[in-house]
Image 1 (cartoon, rainbow, N blue to C red):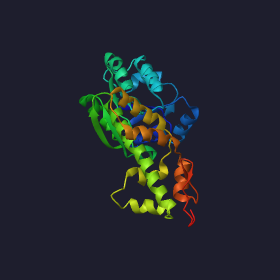
Image 2 (image 1 turned 90 degrees about the horizontal axis):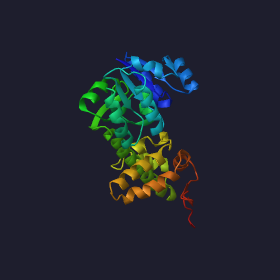
Image 3 (image 1 turned 60 degrees about the horizontal axis):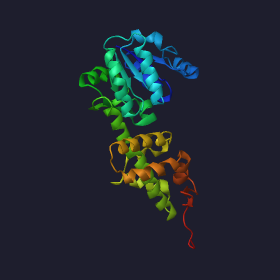
Image 4 (image 1 turned 120 degrees about the vertical axis):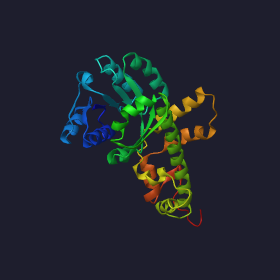
Length: 283
């Protein structure tokens, strides 16, 4: 079984290298020549011409930045003679509706479609222990599982096409809510003179422990706006009130990795424009 990872950026390259390390045949494709050069330096066969690879590939792993890029990649694959029974795995985080939009054209071309966005982030990609949340027919998920397990600790079938992206959205919502809760809790500790990192370490040994708190130093605050936009759009379409996440949507857009670093390790920090450094006796 030969795979092609389309999008060998930071995460995609690590995923491709894990596939290769498990003894599977894999090639990487990207439009960024710097990423191609990096891939070759690390021993991965890579290039910028997806079309020329299509007829030789059994499983495509698509991990690009936007829904539009995913659609473009899928169109290129379907337009260049893919094998009957080949599979396109969308590991990128996209809208569930994008997956459902792509499914008919894939089916008409005899190509399997599985949406399989990943969780556990960059560290999980480096370590090869991501988790893949899959949407697609049971037989299609089973077909791609050997490839996904090269970089995953687990492969979960959430439901039909699009359900994997819904699962990723649910995980994202919990993650960003935890970011807000963690920040406010540790801000309170800091304001009352307790070192925030010290309190964090204590909370990691308490029932309040959460994975986001454990891995907070690695949270890059890159996609929170996109993630929450998808979540709130899905809620609006379903006519489902989510007042808590309406607030999370606004709060999390104000955070950066520097804010977290200042909270945990700095003498001074702010939250919503308010000084949260330790109070003096006259405060």
